[in-house]
Image (cartoon, rainbow, N blue to C red):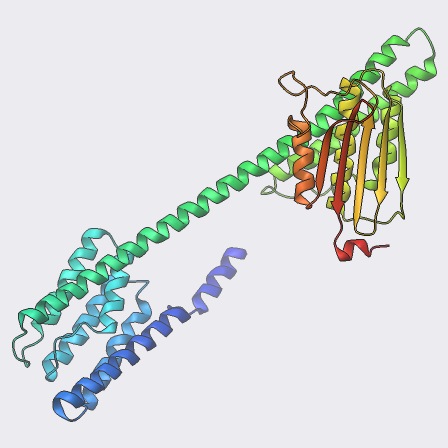
Length: 392
């Protein structure tokens, strides 16, 4: 159905574009002005038939993109007819330049070179009613043909460079998106798998003890697994953006409203965690809320993995022009990176890199390093636009 509509629309469209029409009119106007002045200067009058032929010669330019070689042939024949019907000086007019330029742009180098030579020879051969062209005239027309040929080739090279750069930028964008998805997956897997591991261990340790503790651990384990699968599905849907859309809508991304849940989950996982919200609470843009959630999620995951029997605190502050989040713990004060060494204050390692890039995306700042009183501290400050600050 769509294809049929496309053919119908294409059949109603003219065989030329608006730009082709403008080029044809411009070339005809330039040649007509030049013919008028040269005829008045050389002969004292302007032949009406010559004016008509000049304008007719520009008409084939309407189809120059569809059949460039045929158009150049038609233009040269019109020019030859004009040369043979009245005395005119040797010239490489605008219509011939445009037609030859199009051939060089759209055809192979061999065809383009042959067309350039044919254009020069045809223009010289039509000077039967004019005194034999001088060497200067021959060199001038040959130079003009060579300049048109070179200009078209340079333009082809320039357009190829632009296309290559566009393709390179597209490849870089794809690579950047893959890195972003990898960081998202890292955040999800590191947090939820760590929680699931701790819950499974807690349930195993209490199999012969309090069954209620075992039940709560298994409920948390089930919920964490469900959330991990949901978030991973959302990310994988990004990779399947070109496929057919699924009928079931995806769940919304987590945000500020989910902080209490993730803090409760952290407590159940064995890390005593406090949540402190300061300032007047108000809705935030989804992307900003997601950034705050991911910072807290990653920071608590690191605390559970590396702080050992410590406690943690999450402080969210709503300011008039910013929102700030701080996650700190009272553990050993270092977090191991991928290579086994501690994270520096600049935030090496995939988790902190992901946090930092999220914060920079919103124009904010991130501090990550040992706290003043020991432990480890992650603090982010995210500015609000005037519209976001006004949301109440």
